[in-house]
Image (cartoon, rainbow, N blue to C red; front, side):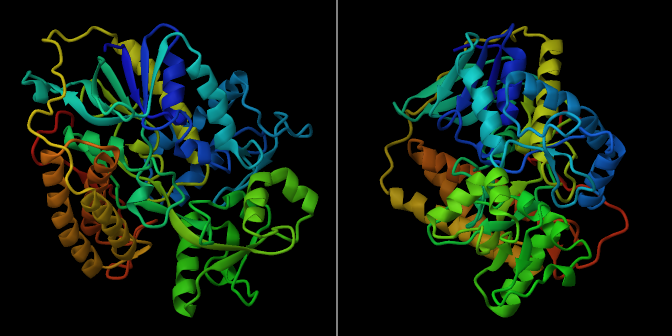
Length: 532
């Protein structure tokens, strides 16, 4: 099947690229589950942008650079922040139902989150991601120039090297149809990776089951550099309950006055940072982790019950309803919370239009590393990046043109030398072992010894998984496990190479921060780097 553009992933980044190109181009959107089952749909807080005259681009840039621990690319940060208002106006034009405030300058309510010096988070109550994705996915689903491949799992990119052709270019991808079990070949002169992050590499995460680092792993195997993979953001407040799977309590709860307390009711954040509950995520997550381990407790508590019940119903209806399902009335009692893996700040190295090291291949959103997030992402900057870089990628693709490379038809997927799996338990066991060892050895606080143990165990797992992949037919679980072990190895390699503590990466063996901030760039050894 041939298209002008193939987009892998159906979150905000992928949807925005698709809609910006589909007026004149044939676009394929490949989603490994349904169109709305991604991390963007789960985003609660909102989108950061300068929308009030009391705020400024300089303020937003400064807040981002401070949160990023000296590692943000200032030019990238400025570009994305400067285009924030236009991105929000585009969403408003699409019909996204942001929460209104007649007294506000733009007519929409703006909230504040940790690390922000001003109220600049536009939101749709406490389910912004769902509102945005629902609006855009409806348009994508009914667009005549967009073909949807739901329940299709991308396997690998089709590169010139794979085809035995000169040069370094991506020509499309192979994807597994999860319904039929057949593998399809999708050819396109431009391929966009928008698969999100890799939160499922950890035992505890706020991410959906789809967050298995597929795009990062595929790009790495195709010869693209990755950067800053050691910087994994742990959301400080994930609901702690045996049956509450991956439910985060938005930063906006702290932004609206939520207080973190120990089980005895003592407030502890002022002991860790002068900004208390409004400190950036890495500081809050590390403080909670410290208190939990120091005192041997299961969780801490986030108390917003001092706010009027009507206020909580208006601003946090989803959180309120979800907590009530587990017998927690946030209007009367605090919420039990723990940190959980939340956001992958690193990713595939790209420019500000999403271009990777491989011609014809783009990466956007959490899959990419533009330099915006540095060593720690500022709250609500992620959806902003999806929108701004997504539009820039669409413009770059349009400018490059759509001439298809001259080559023989792409070969079909070859399953002639593999058989049906004989022991599915191997995949399930390795999946559990991988996520547990990453949580224990490569979590919020790291040491050289833990990282060395993780590297050794990952090498054994990777060999076993890749041997299994080479001998048996692919399945979703096997593909995700293969991608997770590749991404886990990149996280460990990045962490081992950083001889300091910075932002989200905290090492007991290297507690000091070096005077000069440098990104960690990893290059595949088996291919030459095409772009400087």
